[in-house]
Length: 71
Image (cartoon, rainbow, N blue to C red):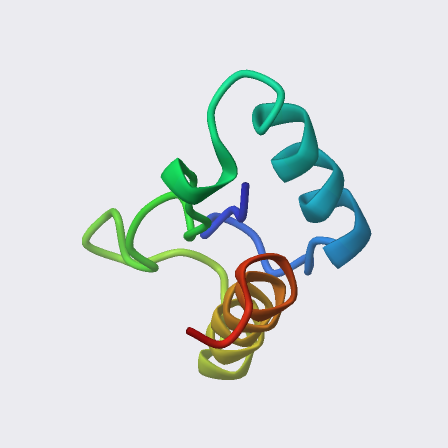
């Protein structure tokens, strides 16, 4: 759901819509959200700054809190 290949930040509304779509087939408590892979999947890394990486991780955390709560 969240690419580690480019710095463009995904929209939380889009992520929540995808989670809702997946929850039609799998119970919500069996789903999770995460970046697609590590931020340096090749030796030279990807074109994301450290700030971009933190923003993407913050998006994962905030989306997860909104969908699944703070537990």
